[in-house]
Image 1: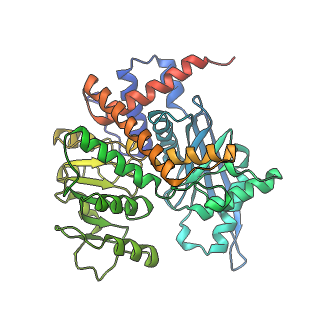
Image 2: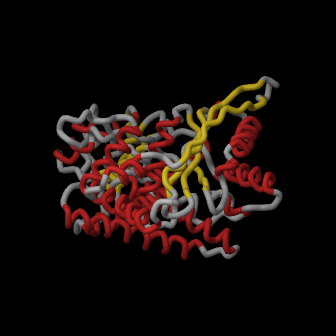
Image 3: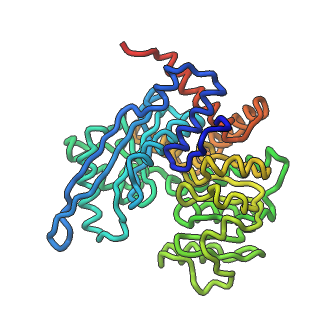
Length: 421
């Protein structure tokens, strides 16, 4: 960005600023910039759901396709009160770059419903899901758009969506959604894939820098599916997980949380971190400024901003969530000498294994979990190596390098395909 440009904070402003920075480095012409800065298609729906008390309530949902030049579009569906069209546009764009970095044959998409899923009964949640699935069905299909879980959704919701799509088609279509239960075409290793990918990326970044994870201190913000898996893998590798947080609080033990499996179990069963844990209980946002070797924001976007970036003491940040570091925070962290391994590299594990699930469903032939994890490790570490090579060649940050690589691949595909007609 030019020095006089305002620093963006919203997700869509940040996504566009990151793209235009890459476009400058790649010397893209105005036509190509306009193509890639815009979404391919957008669907906004309002739909009624019958609640348990017999009343009707209208919900609002979205599905956005950013770019399909490299193949069918791929991206999650999130249920959150914060879902709006601009956030979905940003997340869809990030998915395009994420798939390109990992060299997956997909473009980017995203969707969601503006709802707090915790406020609904299971019956209400199923009715909402099936109605939303029918509303966006015209966009969906294994050769067009293959959604997956995201914040507020899970394998059960993907099962309802896949069943709804299949009933409307008149036959079973397992490849229409990924992140499903294994019993209906889900892939082994899918639930742990994003967290495992964050771990593999950090492991490769440390190897690249000549460092060892042994006794490295780690703080994980967000203790859902991604954060809990990441924490468990770091602990197993000999690192010290000294802090974890969820939406309510943080636990901090500078000597390392030695019962991480118990913390995970309590969170899964009770929906919160154990209040009786021996570690210090801190306000959840304090975790972001602890003195650790590795900070992993694995919750939501816009967690590290210009308001708190100066207080960050971590030696490295690895983005487990989508867009957790805002554009206004990036230059502050760069000036402090804190490398940020960006989301479009670090959290690609979920979409990589979703790709594996789609391939397995399309060919009706399934792989062992060990094979899936091996393939995931190879692809995501190779992606980091390619990003690191671009950074060494061009300078700048890891985010700069990742965007140069990703946008360049989408530009190449666009030029090779040409413009119809």
